[in-house]
Length: 132
Figure 1: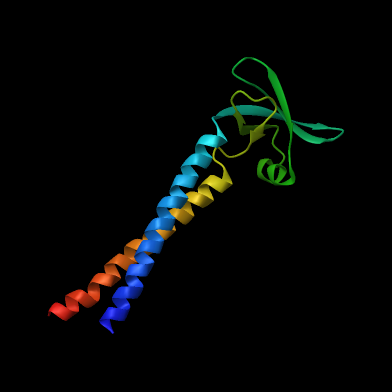
Figure 2: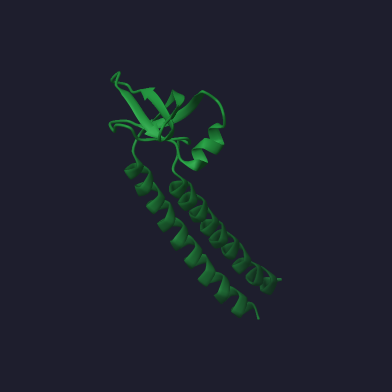
């Protein structure tokens, strides 16, 4: 019985550690590819085409981006909003500073590392019991 538990635990240890480290590396690459996002205060305006936000970037240029349904729900009826725009790009913004995909990859990578660590600890239990 102890050999079976040890074997299964070792498989989960390697899978969890390997996938966890791999996913965290992918998350790092995705974060670097995501670019630099700067927080700024923007004005919310209603236009004929729907709500938009307008803001000044670091170079003093005026930018404008339409708001999606989720953005409108988040901002509500306010006339000013805190947004993040991508440095070096025109008219590109989002409400949150970090990407949903990057956060998902980090959380999944940490979960897999946790599974690997738990399997490692569980794999030692039969060995300790066998020695007693």
